[in-house]
Image (cartoon, rainbow, N blue to C red; front, side, top):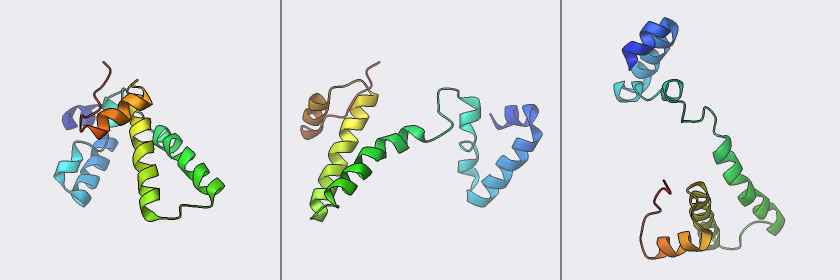
Length: 107
């Protein structure tokens, strides 16, 4: 994969090597995977959108009264957002999580 990048864009290859030297060679293969795999989004907009309702809730309610309440809200939101991305209903996802079954892809 790195050799393919080197052939197509030598400048990118140099950058990948520099990043690999900074963070270790194991990271080198994963740095520009977004350039070779079109299924991976180049931005984190999906993650940002998933966080927005939590921030809005926090602003409206003036924060959480307890740490466990904040953690519970974050955990439930995480399960629901993951389920939505995998085309699973919210209640089914919560049930699967409570019984310890991982949320499977709907493909």
